[in-house]
Length: 202
Image (cartoon, rainbow, N blue to C red; front, side):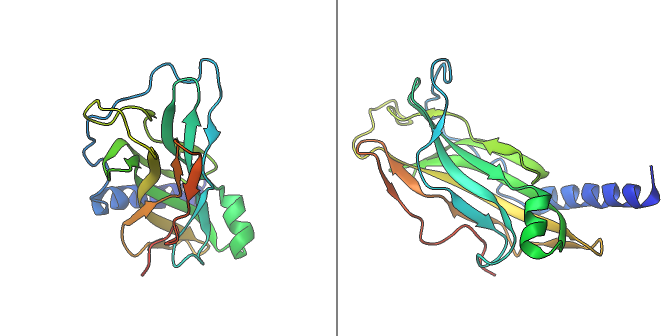
C-alpha cells in the first residue's frame, strides 16, 4: 500500500471518529410505530414525492444526494430514502475540489401529527449508495389507531458532513442539519414542497 493511500485511509478514519463524536442526533430514540409487513413480495417500491437535493451550505455547495419518500404498494409501507451522489458527480459539479464526502446521522419518518419514527443511523462515505429508514405502515399510527386523512408523511434526516479536499484537508459542515423532505398525502395523492431546502444554514 502506498504512503499516499495509507495517509488517505487514515484521514478517512479520523473523519469517521470525529463525526461520531460530534453528532449528538444520530441514533435518536424511535417511537413504537407500526412496521409494514411483507414489503416487496409483489410490487417494487416507487418514489411518491419529488426528491429534495441535499447540499453542504446554503444550497450552493456540492450536491450530496437526494432525499425521497418511498412507498411499497403491496404492504402499504412508507419509508425515507437518500440516494447519495458519487465522488465523480461532485467533482463534475465543483471542478474536482472534493475527493470525498463523509456523512453521518439518522434517517427517519415524520407523520402528520409530528411524530417521528423508523430511525436508522448511518455513517458512510457518500459514494452512490442508498440509505433508507425502516418501512412503516401508512394505516396505523404509533398507538395503533387508523390515520385520518390526509395521511401525510415526511422523509427526514439529521445530517452532518465532512469533506476531504484536494490538498488532503478535512473540513466539517457548520453543525448538524435537521432536514425535512417533501411530503406526500396518501389520501389524495398530493405533495407539499419543503421551501426551506436541504442544507445547513451557516
